[in-house]
Image: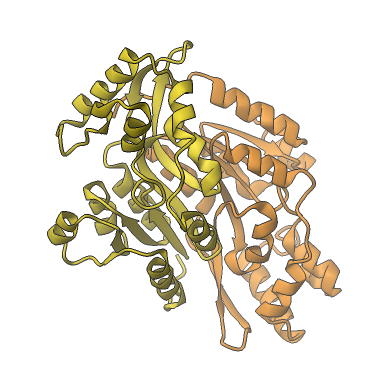
Length: 208
Length: 208
């Protein structure tokens, strides 16, 4: 009884802010935590930029809806959902992710949300919980599931470490170098093999 | 940020054991906890009956694959997945549920599993955890989601009580009479209204 947890951006989708920056031409929206280390400062800066350019939630959802999933992502998701229970754990916001969910087949998604004004202005962002990915994996373990976690970046490390099995997917060299105990894969075929191996391995659970 | 938890049999599907009993003609398979109060005795009896009739996992999956979802279930599930995060909490077993999942659109399912022999004989059943439905709802609350729970029977009461919002769906009169504080609905349109009301109500969460 396996719950497989996947990061979303960098695995199934390109990075949403970078795509929004490209499409809108607002270069500063491509800044990441590598450039601005304080996440709150980064996010409030992004929301200020949207405001300055008069970009409401409707406009940004229109932009986001043109983003395409990574090649092979949908096929992998459909396959994985037939093999185990799949949950997407992301640090994005429901209002940004929603236009992309049809193309991914509406997987279960745990992320954060936004505070919107009736005008559509994005007033603030709400982090659902601290360390949300690790906390979710821990919950599934507490519910007596075997867990698998996979992502591409530093914010995925704690869930990969918390899970019974974990790996990186298309992670940058520095991430792989910092966590050499975890394998890094680059194709969905490899992920299929990893999951198939986990599912076929002896998974009998004790009666609780 | 709402996680909606639904029971499966009685809500989206007919009762699997009763259908299997009808299709196979093995009347005793229709016995429920109303007839045999000890669940372990009931389940071991069912597995013994399957054995006596030479019904392996392949055969029972073939039988189960002919069961049709309740009318309107798939449309409701597709709609609900676009409105909130939906998890099906069931006391069935993954190996029984699997043939029915394509017709339901592969929702995330938390249930139990079976121990199978290489021959396909069902050797035993494994309860993943005690009070699994309530425990799952509690986990989602701990992850700072608002929660909604809905089912048709006594084994749904603890999750309905644990959730922020809960109701019965197509529950028998005795269940409704025993828990008069919870509404009982009978159509998917009513459930849509309930969910829509919850989602549109102010759901701003504090920063954690």
